[in-house]
Length: 225
Ligand code: DX5
Ligand code: ZN
Image 1: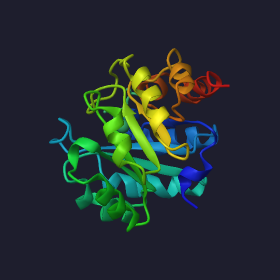
Image 2: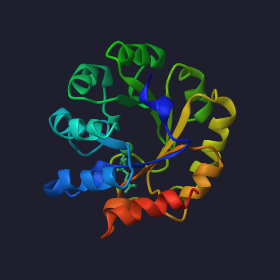
Image 3: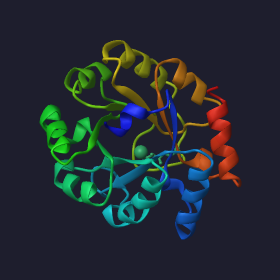
Image 4: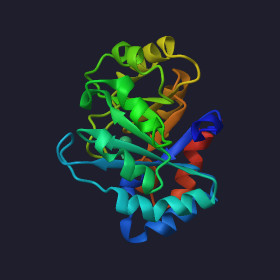
């Protein structure tokens, strides 16, 4: 069974990009103890997106801890030539890889390549990309990720146009494919993205940017109750 099959109706997914890296293990433990089970791991290559973030070496350090709680690490590859990185991400303990529609020529073949490594698969798309074009080729994916910011950095403001885009996507995607949303998710907008059909909400700054991350995580969950 793929990890995406047990997504609890809806998941708030802490994005490690916003974590305090000097206290990463402690912060992860706190979120795991408060109930978070799916963690977002942003790999930026300094080419597809401007910043270089982190990669398999850090993943190998965090994945065993997340797995010991029965959780999953969902890897968002903001990189050119994502296929090249699949074997390493799988070996380092990644549970799924989400690559960008804009970064590959053949989406179905890229999905198939990830499956060969036993990985769950997501297809992400940028704010300029037409949701219907993604839906058409992502039929074998587990997740489709609608970016609600331009990918690269955390702490940006949610683009409200994402709501219509998620709604349009939900209408054309098969029910079994989860819609994920990433960028600027906070207490004020998390309910509205859920209402239009997203079930996996990535949250960086709105969890790690606050003093009490357990409380911030719980508040996001409660906004969906
Ligand atoms: C940035 C990443 C996001 C980032 C979101 O492009 O893909 O996952 O961590 O951060 P916030 O929640 O701060 O917008
Ligand atoms: Zn991301």
